[in-house]
Length: 172
Ligand code: IMP
Ligand code: MG
Image 1: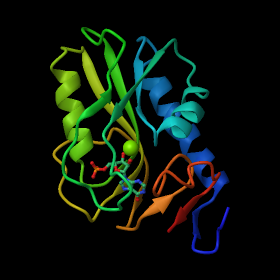
Image 2 (image 1 turned 90 degrees about the vertical axis):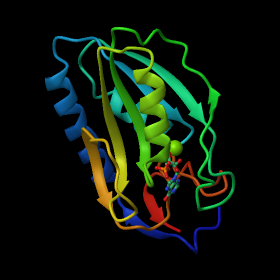
Image 3 (image 1 turned 45 degrees about the vertical axis):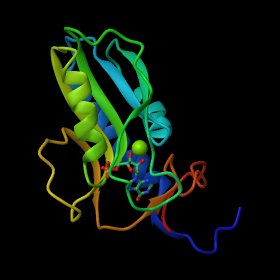
């Protein structure tokens, strides 16, 4: 794979350290609960799998897939569900697991969708958040890293479906 245009941004060790810290907080907060982790495909699949393996409390998982950016770096501004949830959200403690929050549009859509199904609680775990993009009207309960407004790939994140397999996070 051509790597020349990629600039190393967050090292594997750094990611893994943060993922463990996030899991530690989650373990503490959910010690008497059985949360459902809902991973947002495709981007969150690696973060989700690393995070979940650090979780010590009894838990369940499910995945949802939203329409993506297509092959462009800028959001189309429209979000829709491509793969629906299979779990019963009603009365449950939900943790949405997302790779990156940019404009916050996808998360807003998801929060709406999940809250409509009357969960007991909803929290958000996101590996990355682009702090300078826009105002978001929700709280990111478990956040890995705040980053500048740069397009990043690797560790599940793609550009035109490529680079998801990289172990580190790169700036494109
Ligand atoms: P938002 O709806 O603008 O918050 O965008 C969120 C989604 O866009 C994420 O789940 C990612 O799939 C994708 N995305 C946003 N920024 C990046 C990036 O820098 N690299 C890769 N994907 C991104
Ligand atoms: Mg995503």
